[in-house]
Amino acid sequence: MHSITLQPASAELRPVIEQLAELYRHDMSEFFGYLPDAEGRFGFTPLPLFFDEPEREALVIRCDTAPVGFVLTRPMAEGPTSISGFFVVRALRRRGVGRQVALQLLRSRPGAWGIAFQEANAGAARFWRGVAAAAVGPGNWREETRLAPSTTPVNLPEDQWIFLDTSRG
Image (cartoon, rainbow, N blue to C red; front, side):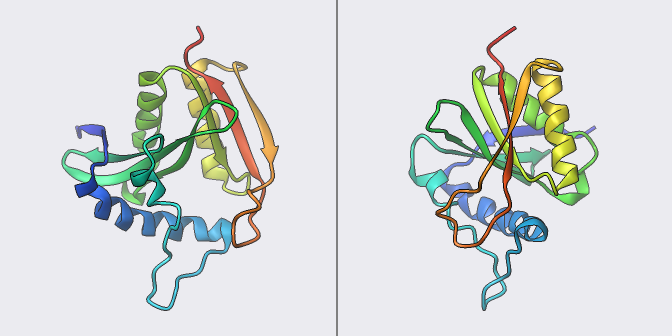
């Protein structure tokens, strides 16, 4: 049995998150049309904000000692905390690792949460709806569709959002 932990990413772990973010962007390229740059890197321009702005947070997911993913959180203007990025390496997907980490995070920080995903990403849609139901119970969360931010450089698909509050019940 492996030990799955979630830890704040210190400045020393920034290169680890940056490397994992390349894998994340590659995975998301299927839904967003991202292409690598001339050096073969996808890049993730908002990533530095999660290290430089105190209200944002980057967390490393570890399996034993290996870094196997990350979670990025940020406050939303209307109050909830957003899970802005969530990634688990393919070797550990569909094994309960992501669910364990997501529930650990939501339960350890009671309050309002917002989680965005793309409906075309069927695995993510199933995953986040299951996490929401497990975290607060069926029917105790809501969904809405929102346009992608207009500040993004590419034409992104609409976001499907789940909103829930882990401080209730």
